[in-house]
Length: 439
Image (tube, rainbow, N blue to C red; front, side, top):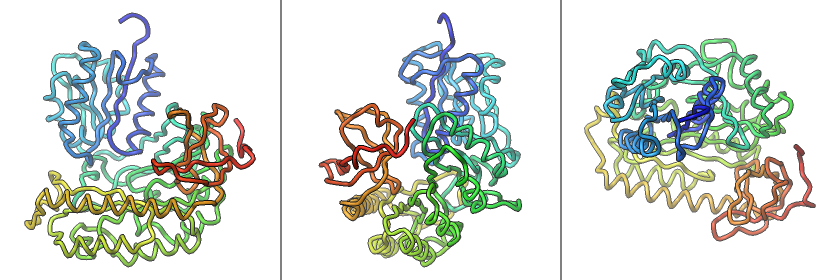
C-alpha cells in the first residue's frame, strides 16, 4: 500500500475502553499513521477487548476474520482486558500478530515496529506488577469525551475478573487530571464523562478523594457539563450527591451498580453494601434532584440465586425510583470465587429472569420519560442525521430529537419536551430556537 499507513480500531466493552482506544489512536497519528474506519482497508487493525462481554473468544475471532477480509496482509494487534486474561488463547487465533496486556497496549506503535511476523508475540506482565496509571481521554469521534480518572479495582467481587485484567486501584493526582480535562476541552467538546473501573475510589492511598476531584473539575473553564459514568453505592456519599445537586456543571444523572436486591446474594457476591444503603442513596438523590436520572446494573442467575431471591430483586427494583436498568445474565468466569458455589442456576432460567427485568427496565424508562413531559431542559445535540432528525441528551439523560439543522451540532439548546415519538424519543420544541452555547 502506497502513501501514509492506515490504522483502524474495533473497541468492545465499556466507556473506559473507548477512552483508551482513542489515546492509542493518537499515538499512532503522532507516528504518522492515518486513522480510518474498521470496515476500510488498513495496514494495522487494533482490537481492544473486554472481559465482561460474553463469548469474548468468539467475538475476537470474528473481528479478526473481518479485518483479514478487508486486508489479508494487515498487521493485527489484540489488546485490552481479555488480552491480559487469556493471551495464549488469543495468540492462537489465525491472523493475530501481537497480543498486549494492560500496560503494554499503550506502547503498541513501538511494539509493531519491533515485531517479526512469524508467530503471534505476547507481551503482558503479571497483573500484580501493573502499577502505573496511564491517562486517557476520547476525542474526534464524539460530541463528548470520556475522561479516564481511575483504573483497576481492589474489590474482587465474586463474579468479576476486572481486578485480574486491570490490576489494583490507581489514579493520577487532581492537578494532572485537571490538565487532561483541559486538553480534552481544547478539542471543542462540551461534555466530559468521568470514567474508570471504580471511580469513587479515586485517590485511594493518597490524601485526595473523588469529592475533591469533582469540586476541582467544576471550576474548569470551557466545559459545559460533567457526567459521572458509574459509581459504587458505598462510595457515593451524601456530600457527593449534595455537591452535584448544587453544581451548574455536574448533571443530575447517576449510574449506580446494584447487582441484586437480595442481601443474601449481595453477601455471596462479596459486594460492600446491603440493599437498604442503595435505597438511601436513591432517596437522597431524588430528594435533592427530583428529575434526576438514575440507572442501575443488576445481575440475574448468580449461583445460589433462588426464585425467591430473584423475586426479591424484582420487587425491590419495581418499587425503587430508578429510571432504567442494565441487566446482565451471570456467566461463569475463570478464577472467580463464584465458581465455588455449587447451586448453579440453569442457563434457560437465567435468560427468563433477564427478560423479566429487561421488560421492567423498559417500563421504568417510559415512566421516567413521561414524568418529564412539558418540562424545559438543555440538550447537547450530536452530529448524526437520522432520517432528517438530529438528536442529543438532556442533562438528565433523556434522548431528544428535532428537525436536522447543522447549526445545532455540538450546541447546547434549551428545549421544552413536547411529545414522545413511537420510538420512545422526545420530539422537542426549541425554546425560541436560542442556543445556550455557541461554537
